[in-house]
Length: 158
Image (cartoon, rainbow, N blue to C red; front, side, top):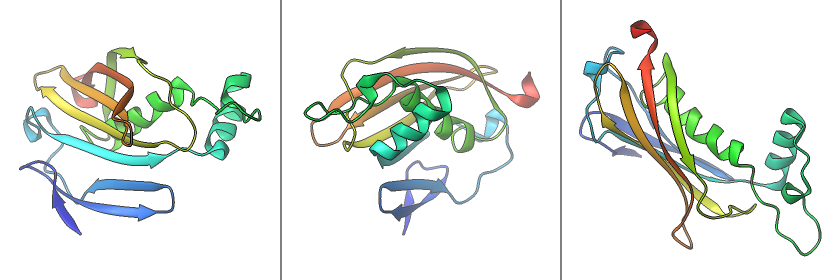
């Protein structure tokens, strides 16, 4: 199913059990001129306990808050949410060759295992330093669990 998420780039939707991804079909040459303020990308993802366990093993963060402990729902690692945003920035918008210059982040609410997330990145300023805003929202509750801004450079500009 083809879908336009911005007037500059066509996207298509890929689905599997726990993940909906909206992918670019193609882009023009990789330079800041290929982008404009307002370009957006988003994915939907439901994180499982298996995802948290794999992340815990990778980072050695075995805080009990991220584990299934009977009555309490496991809380998703903030760094895992940040990694989902980084994945969108580094592979889709702006894409490969993007370098993070600075970032500000907030975690206004907890994100629990099993909640369906929408992760969005929007390009808000296009200059030598690109600026994006990003959000992770739990769809059912319209609850923001992660938000922030990042300043980026394209590798050829570094």
